[in-house]
Image (cartoon, rainbow, N blue to C red; front, side):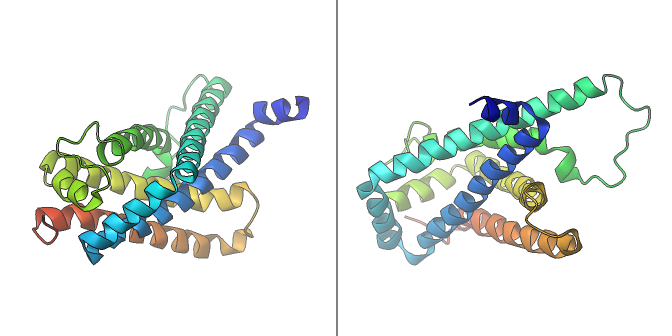
Length: 219
């Protein structure tokens, strides 16, 4: 236990934990996107998928709890690292040294906090139904279409998907090097693959509210 606490207290330990929890989120996002794409196969297919998940409720709740725990630890580690960074240099540089930093890397803490809040909203919108005025239990097709017919909800979802792509694109690339899984000479190849994968996820997810608003997906 003492070794675990010492590892957690170290910056290396926090970065490793961020990488592992980020990897869990990375895998979940891809799987979730693949499930969502079934909406294009029609009401029966996506509702059959919803019923399948409902039948695996025990396993599904384990995944949800694990995901929420991973998000919580990810955010906590990020905030603690940010505080450690500020404490190490309480006086900022007169000229910000961001020559090589990308917008995604400079805004990771902010996009991460927004996405954590979005996750809770997304669950309330499409899983629990608390934030959905026309929610029907196990009628995933109806919930998706009626939910995204509300323009502000669709716009908010689209914006969050873009932020998700930036966050996971940069984080997914960084986690390989934080865990020492990739040789530095493959950095550019890993970065290209990671961002291409996240671009695919973003486009696929955004296509759903766009299809609803365009009348391609309708009741």
